[in-house]
Length: 523
Image (cartoon, rainbow, N blue to C red; front, side, top):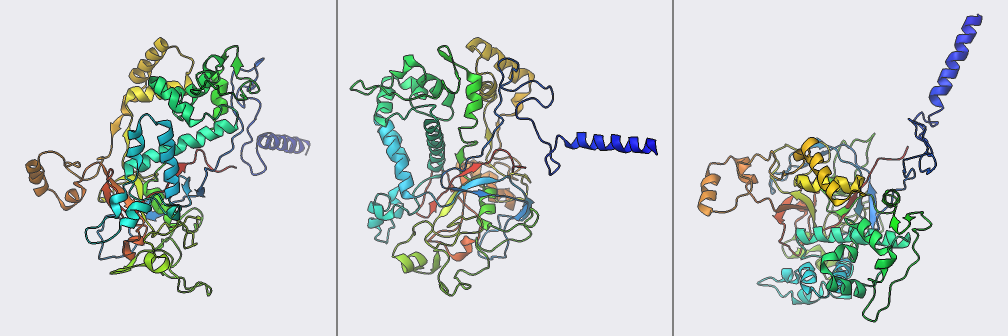
């Protein structure tokens, strides 16, 4: 009996030891002050050697909502005889992300163009290239000149979706938005001052080769911060009257200054909690389709799909006595009968006009305007990656990728040592496998990008299989989805897909941005 009692006590102690490092839910509880594996202190100049940020708070970008994605069946979900069968069913999954609640509007775009006009006042071509094409409203046999003159610029259309914007322009907007989000975070945190745009323009004209020190970009955030926090450089930020930018830097309170230099290791750790976790971008087609469906999950799996982004298969409200009979989206109901004209006297409508979000809180995922997505178009041959599906990867060169690794982990290296370490990464770590253009990867096409001699193209095309013919388009053809004000109802189904060249634009295509989420759900 005594032996049994001893065994029971020892077993109890073992259980206590096992679970002492766990939360009440049985998951491991990690130390915030010391290493769980070596016992050495974190962020301790007297004992430790490792500076680490142990607190992580995810930031929700302005105007976006959280999309919690699970495994689902993606692809055409009804037998529609009038559309091309180019989206075969397949079960796929994707990581969670944030997505704009509304389509990007005219006032959003004017904010972007105005910033470009002020910062690059000496280079008006930069802002001119960003302008939407207002002539997309012109038709040979229609009088749409009021739209041409007023749709983009009039306050009456402030909250209408921007149109006449190409895929390339939309992508550039996403990059700009990332920079402005992060710049504001750094200003509010005391890392950098707000610099009036006239001063930014002045410095760009004087020193165009040093733009990364005068125009904040996320890519060169650390260079910008280090430069502007150096007392010798602060006088660079003076206007034509000689007024110098002054600000209360938090570098001293953060203990980032070591003499006249900045502790780059500490700065990198701090910035990971100030800058947004990822960048704004266009959604992949898989992400867009997930988000548009807005389906309710059962243990992380979607077993069914919707015909439209809202529940049911009706285009009018039937379950609300107050709004019964009202449309849920604007589209082309029949010849000469666009819903927008009937409701508001306009073709497009203000974003969120119908007040009917899907289950994710997203508005206008059907109707109003179609939306650009990130993918290169291929008629679907059924070959896709099962997780985070996307066609369009163009991975950066080996040298650039190696440089990015060094920027993240070895900011203190001198130029000669950086060159040496870049060689190590490329030659000895197999980084040569990372580069490449995968837009044509396994797309069932002999020659995916049909460009060049027309006679040769005709000869190749003649001997292609049906799938090869469907895929025989350029690598710059981009997918758009959603159905717009000028589309029949069939195109409002989120599984439908069409394409347009990435530099082209129309009066019924707009876009919204997304941002990837770094890490998973909290315990």
